[in-house]
Length: 87
Image (cartoon, rainbow, N blue to C red; front, side, top):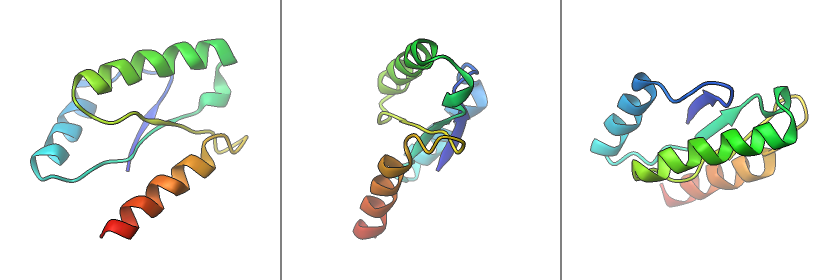
């Protein structure tokens, strides 16, 4: 699982980690956290921007998540169970 704050741009370190995982054929679950800290429209804009960059780099779409509101919890568990079931 790679956890990234939705309020920040993807760093070179984030992309290096994801590239390293790709080299070793490890499929990461990318989680954009703290979506509750932004307005809905800003969270959507940031999610779309980061998703576009991740897809361009050939990574799957992230999960938007908030520990405070529970947003994305179901989707995150689905991805965890998907990976655990294929192991």
